[in-house]
Image (tube, rainbow, N blue to C red):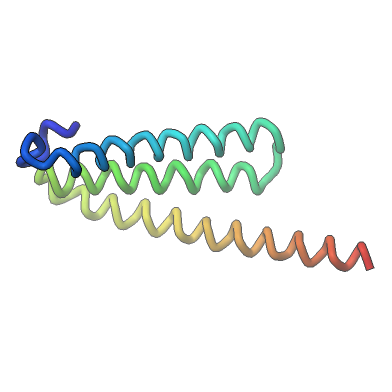
Length: 106
């Protein structure tokens, strides 16, 4: 993928950061799937969908920016909005669970 980026041979730091981001994205998805396998609940499923949406957002932005496919800008925004909206739902669910736990302890 880095070969399609203009000037990737001259800017070695950008290439290293590009591949590091790809590895971090793969690690994020793998960790979220591992969490889902361990705790099979709605929060785990939301976490997997959020991570996949954020990785898809990065991929569609790469297609739009570096490969000059303008239509992928729309896909990037849509997937990014879905991921952020689900992140808000996840945070709300997490806060509600914390509140219920504190009430039952008292």
